[in-house]
Length: 385
Image (cartoon, rainbow, N blue to C red; front, side, top):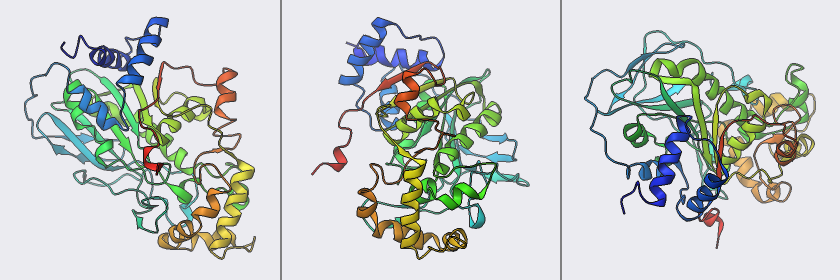
């Protein structure tokens, strides 16, 4: 049986129609989709979805243009010409969150002069990887995204899928193979975007001093989540220049990425940045730390860096090097693991995330968009003995 006549083929057809806005849920579709997901949707990343898409009937390769030059609101970008696709790698979507911008909401990217060479994949945000080790990687200057587009540019706007990388909110990256959208763009003609966001204590540190620092933003602990939203805002404002439809954006993610998608669906501040959602192993029943819990954890973390004086705690923490912050995280992982189910992750702060997701879903207090929800096979195998 060919792929289009198989369960997998029917799922892929449904998936593509979903991105185009032509598929709507029905009871039969829900039943069939659940069966297909349980048996076939074994992806741990969008890379597998990309591989599955290759089973669809092949398309003739698009002619090479030698261009891949696009003008954005921040400046011109020169991408990589892959023949049937263009790759725009390492485009800044926010100001680097360094020095006094550490542990603050992201700021829009500063425009650049001339043409930005978007030809080298950006490194990950600062992290400890693998989890449980003392091996550090990445940089705080990391708020960049990658875009894969069909080549030549489409004659009319095409659907856009924004992939939120996975990695337990500790080691996600827009540049690993799991996040690569080249094949999907070439096979379907859609545009794929993957964006970095701050990780671990850099992305999800709560602290009472941070909460009180800015009356205009009386919260802390969701900086990585806000980075994701900033990337979505950049996509909304710029994706048309790449041939994408800003009114047809689907957000997708697995595990930590799936949880992120689920949280954007319930976040009032994320409304309007996407029109569809795909949640892979991101369960609404997960209970996240409250702001009070996050602040208590943050106070303990600050103390491990020697920052205990309330009058200087912020300058003390921001004065630490990237390596010092990551070393404090690595040294205290076991202690922090005992105080929170997820060591570093999104915070129910009453602002960006108003309440526990399950409560918001049950009360109908969420962004009502067409959504595919599923669980990936072997979820959590990496933690098994």
